[in-house]
Amino acid sequence: MKTKISNDRAYFMPWKTVEHKIGRILEKLFFNKFTCMARRSHNFMSVIIKRDKPNEYDLSKAFSSVNILTDEELAVIFEIIELPEKEWQMCSIINRRENELSHSVCEGLLRMDSDIKWQKSFAGEDGLYLFGVEDNAKSEVKMRIGCLNLSLSELKSKNELLAYLTENDPTHATLMDFCQDYRDKYHNELCWNYPISDGKHLGTFMVLVKEGILSLPYDSADETDYEQFCLDDVCMFNIESLRVFMEDWKSFNTDLENAMHSMKLYLTKRSCVDENKTISD
Image (cartoon, rainbow, N blue to C red):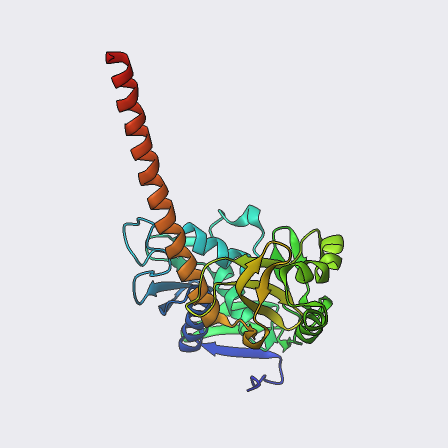
């Protein structure tokens, strides 16, 4: 639904709308629901955000409150609103303990969820006033991979990839041939192996295509062409499926790190015992 814009090119956004929009964006970013409360100080707004439940995505971090945003989460917010890194420490958070985000950060989040753009904003008693309002033409969303700011529209399509795999055998070796152009152009193959089971397949390759992120599952591998893909089960990732993959990987990684840490302690203790035994002998 298009936002109605007044003839004088100004627009009024009630605080309830501000709170709803920011909460919705944060939910998509962090897979948690947030309660938002807007505040006004002079002509500026701030928004206090509260996580509605503990952060199940990253329970390995220790904080004084489960509601406080982690440094990693703050970095995600600053990155997605394209706040220059040199400004990350400059008054972007007014009150860290209460998760109170400043006017500039809130405005950056609001711009992500709006079909209008504006030049200036003013915090009033009952909401946010926007001035110099214009229709916001849909701009292409890019993906940042390391130092690469990638336009997916420049990539080959899902159908092109599947046709290539079908014609040349659906294997990892064939996928690497398909990605050779990306390796030459971007110095990155734009695909990643997710080597743990999703409950249905042995593993999955995550491949960037024109339409988004493609899931290319496999159940077997050989010594020549490596992974053998299951083309019948190819699908596109969405936010929810990616969330599940991220949580499963976090659990797998944590369990493995804990196990290796225990192994290291065991080997260290055994080494000390063996050295002491040698000396006594």
